[in-house]
Image 1 (cartoon, rainbow, N blue to C red):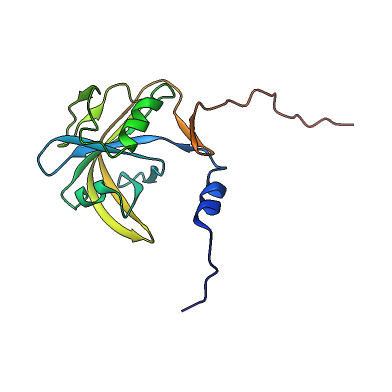
Image 2 (tube, rainbow, N blue to C red; image 1 turned 180 degrees about the vertical axis):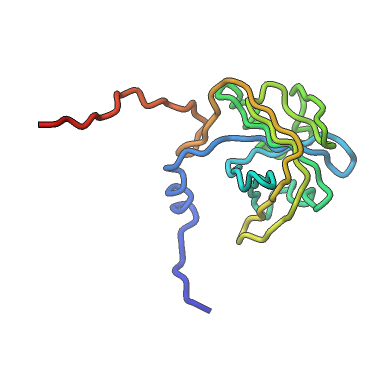
Length: 173
């Protein structure tokens, strides 16, 4: 086995933090059938055909146990004004959905009202990924609405900042 260098986890996290990531809340039902969810910053498209997406969760997060091949879930892409909702689902609360408006989807998991994107999925596979697990979902339903996505950047929730300068044009002599 190769001898890999030791990394300072905090320094590595700070280095990853220089790249803004979208903020999503994955909603699903717990073992008792109650709605719950978890905030993720690792949501990504995987395949258009078949329609697949993925996200990762820390192995020690309480919600990891809920993701099995039978699990239905919804990835809710949050708009930039829903930072409080993102923080609520990031905390270890007994009722993460308290005060949050939910809607039904075609899978056995609710969506968050006000999300600018939703991807209702059935778990396709769960993969090991170091101190995380990678959940791949088969997209059964999707929708999107206007708005700017909430981003996580350098340890905080932020609004996206559009590039406002004019593109550089090549000039001929």
